[in-house]
Structures are given as C-alpha cells and as structure tokens.
Image (tube, rainbow, N blue to C red; front, side):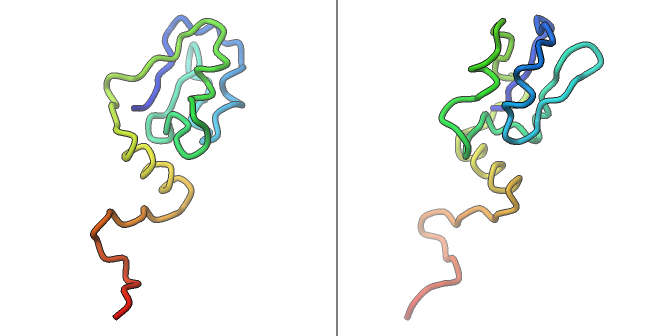
Length: 97
C-alpha cells in the first residue's frame, strides 16, 4: 500500500527528508507521495518513517494503491536495482545435480 498525504498537511518539511526512497516531494499546495516509489519503508524500516514524524497525522494509506507486503518488497528491490528473489519452489538457476 502506498501512502498519501492529505490536504491537512501543514508543510512542516519533516517528512520529506525521512523518506528512504525519495518518494515525497512538494506538490502545488502541500507535500505529495509518489506511489511508484513508496514502499511504506518496507526494506528499510519496520514502520513508515513519514507517518512516525508527521505532527498532524495526515499520511494514511492511499486507497487507490493497495499493495501486499510482498508487492512492497518487490518494489523495494526494484528501486534498489536488485532482482526479486525467486518464489519458493521456483528454479533460481543455481540447482545442483
């Protein structure tokens, strides 16, 4: 699930530097989150850092971009330039005879 910033944002500037994926930027009126980069901090932290530091609690889950933890991890790996690991039972090219 990607997160979003609502219009309750006060532009306090605390969330942007906390995002490990650089998914947060200033929009026309308040900060916005790029859903293509938001992993809810999966792969980096146990909790979304922007949510932790927001003083007005204006960063809910974006209902238009619901993702599973597995999808968030795959997005994290893609953003890091790493291939996703093969699922259990799938060949990884390193079988030993």
